[in-house]
Length: 313
Image (cartoon, rainbow, N blue to C red; front, side, top):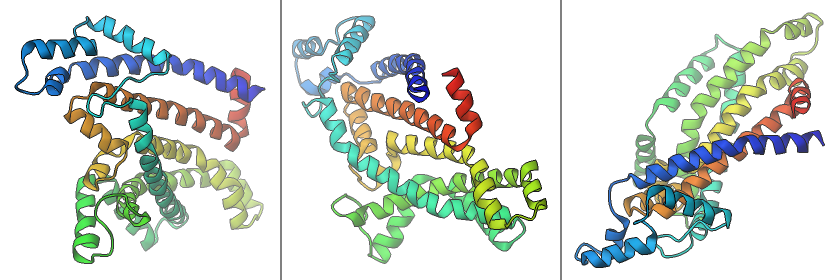
């Protein structure tokens, strides 16, 4: 019951964040340049036709009335209709969602499989050549521009070697380049956080006590060091997954990957404010849910955090 009570409390505390993000998103979308009614009617349409479309969309109402109408439709579970596609927003988002989820989890899986071992090894052998190489690669991976990495991958693997497709999502091979691009950017921060967390855990008193007792290195590493190092690592992984689910906009655009990010770019260009609101709403909800999941993972990693959360929950 403590877990259920804690989850209910976290959801309750997330409501003000959700409302604030909703209001900020609504105002931001409305101040974008361009008139959706004019885009729908066409550049040569008469002003009365444009005004009629604006009235149909509710854009002639004051801003506060538009916000109230939007909240009411949200409560009913209606995200509105896309101006560009003339279909429900929820259908467009759900159609693109599987592509973004697949890309996010493949990229994160590659990053974890590479970054965690490198971070642990560089922490255990701080003066080795591998540590210096890992530090340089981590810095390059974290600082390299996404579009540059994507273009280099396309040039090498698609243009020169011709072994991987450069765009689309027609087969599992199409996900390799965009996932590799995102994972390279994730590896840098994840490797550095893993290394610093493991070093901090190795220097803690209880690890020094375990070493003094003569416990084997593998047992110390698996039972004590890694477990006590996981809090910042899990935090970063949660933030990375949230960002990826929010839409890796540049990567999806370069590789023409049909996910949430490329859909958001298309909706911004067309001034499809209902679709923009629906996508950003999904991004906000994704971050809220992932933050709650990360907090629960904290509790299972560290019993001290679990006891504190259960008491306050």
